[in-house]
Image (cartoon, rainbow, N blue to C red; front, side, top):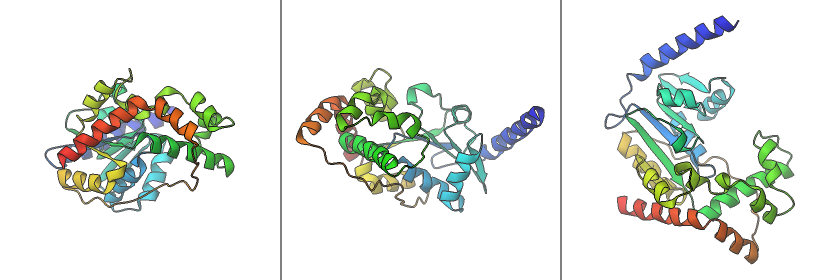
Length: 257
């Protein structure tokens, strides 16, 4: 059985290598990769790219989650999610993951994208999502670990959430949480935009890569926790370096318009 799996894996890899070599995405790029920062709208962008296969994007996304390799061939397009090894090999049309940029070695001719979001809104979106999962008893895989961060209050959440998740936008591009390093690495992506300017960002990607991306809006929590004045002050203090990074990203985005 193990030998059969290895043989199948080998042939799938060779097939994907042959198919992906034919890709020529706007300006000579061979593939597209999203540095998916959580709660910034990355899932919506994933769905937009998955829809380019001509199949139902939700069905393709579900397949990606079910496949052991997290790799699917849909018509003539190969998609990869969350699989570091396959992402680094580069045999795909579009791929994404939450893996920090400093832990990845992407092949040449990869068009990279990153989406940033106003830090307070991003962390509140994360908190509201976890609250919703807890209150509605939704058995999402993230709850096994992240559900423990909720504690009994928002202050508990701020104390319990690990720094790399609290400052996830910063950590994605700097293991040392350096605003300077993160800014330089993020702005080196092929396209960087903000959740707040999402529609413009989709147009920019479409124009740069000569693709017809649909504007989609996926996953919106029905919860909306209201911060007290004291909680807001505390949150701003904790997010201070990421707020500085976000402002740099916004300045560059406006400059690129």
